[in-house]
Amino acid sequence: MEMPKHQYETDVLIVGAGPVGLFTAWLLAQLGQPCMLIEKSHTTTALPKMEYTNSRTAEIYRSVGLDRILRPLAVPEKHPFNEVWATGFGGHAISTWKRQSPTEDRKQAAEENDGTWAREPRIRQMQSVIEAELKRLCQSERLITDLWGYSVVNVEETDSAVWTTAHNDAGDAVVFKSRYVIGCDGAGSAVRASVGIQMERRSHPTKARYVHFKTPDADKLRAFGPFWHALFFGGAVVPQDEIDTYTVVEILPPDADLEPITDPEGFVAKILGGLTGKPFPVRIGTMLGTGSWKLYYGIADTFRSQKGRVFLAGDSAHTITPVCGFGFNSGVQDAFNLAWKLAAYLRGHGGDKLLESYNAERMPTVQLMVRTSEHVAQTYFVPMMSKAFTLGAEKINASGEDGDRARAELKVEVDKAFLMHDLEGVVLDYRYASSAINMSDPDGPEPEWDMRKVHPSTWPGCRAPHVFLSDGKTSIMDLYGSGFTLVDFSPSGTIGDLFVDTARSLAAPLKKLWLPEESHCRLIWERDAVLVRPDGFVTWRSQQQCSISPEEARSVLLCALGRIV
Image (cartoon, rainbow, N blue to C red; front, side, top):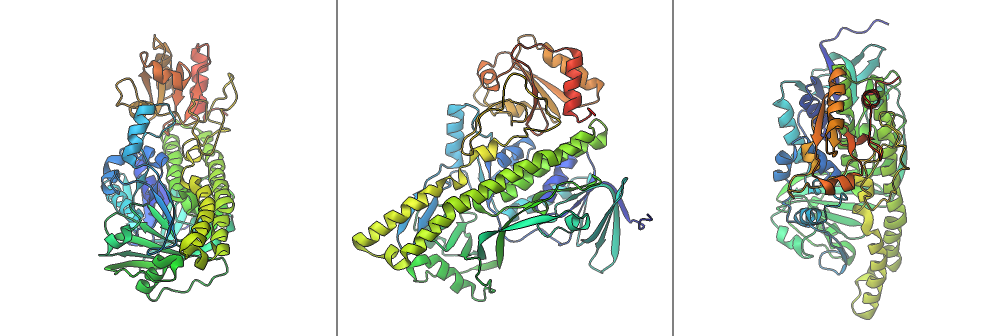
């Protein structure tokens, strides 16, 4: 088959410069891998959009040095993650879900130091800020070529390369030849469609309309005290930056018409009034944008094309509703899983099974997140909304004993849904249990799992636990290398030496981390020797009676590198 003449050639072409595409490009550059990034728009989003970075994503930021750049631009850590349920501003409070601030989380994590916490607490930060900073970082990297205003129309894959055709602003066809393509181009992915990957979509039982704006009346919106979300049984308000930027959302039934919002101030006043039926007006100083969306779940049939040269990440691979906050975070975690594998393969020390493991690991993880989000929506969110509408606005807003009883009855349903953003088992303890690049553990079965709790373990496939060392300040995670890390708690340190020598013979990056005096960390990590992947997951650990031969060490590393046929 004759392929079109190309104007650009690169090892890796990333399509889509949203947060996942930008993060992927930046990660590859940190790993020394050149890449090209193309985007149909001319700039990053000006809309706040999502505002929740969960603790696993925050931990990833720290591991690659982004926390010191992004966190200072986020909502200050002193602000709690409270969620308020009420009939509306000017109405009655139903329940307040109190959650600690990141500052308080840090303190408790250090005091407990039991392996159940993330290295970093969650973050409140607008997507517009994240994208702008990532774009700045990408444009400062000599290994990244970014082109804006290029809209992909076709992707053609062969056994040896990928040809991607895009149209520029003038309508000219521009062809990019690459060894690999990573599609980060959103739910309507042209990359996914071009290579014939299907995505089945299931509807969520709601639709939504929204307004993003800045207001000089922020003090009026603090009537219920500090909150991350305020929800009004048909509407919600999100303080995006704790200064003057807000998002107001109208939650609608699935059969509702999504009419354009022609009167933003009237729309905002109506939603803020909630079930009271009385508008709660605030001035809009700067209109940032309006819009609507239909909520649905979708997972692509595969995250890697049939010929193996096209990968999908983020919304192009899966769409998850805002319930539980998995969407953006799962995309960042896709990128973190894929980037080191692709870089290792292109540099020659990674094998075919390393690339195969991306789909094998991320697909079950995303399926878990989608199942959890659907479960929470159907089991808690829908019954709660149904209870509110069954009771009716008049009864819920009533004064006196009748109103108190109705609100107390509604509060029972509301409080059942508290777990919505407290699913640390899903956030931190998802596992790559059946991956071909992790060695099986002959000493025991997979540890217990709970969607709300973390069970710290170094069982292969688990995320290695964050534990502060004896100085009380340094996490074991802070000492990982940029490649593999062999953590050796043995008195002699000879296991680590063996792995360093073996890795050198395989041209694989590996750091020995010898911690013979760290008994508390050793207790939580369970074994004398643990091999940690570049993404922080365990690929192998020694048996209870620790001994390993050079041949066994070589087999372990060949497996971890995806080089065992």
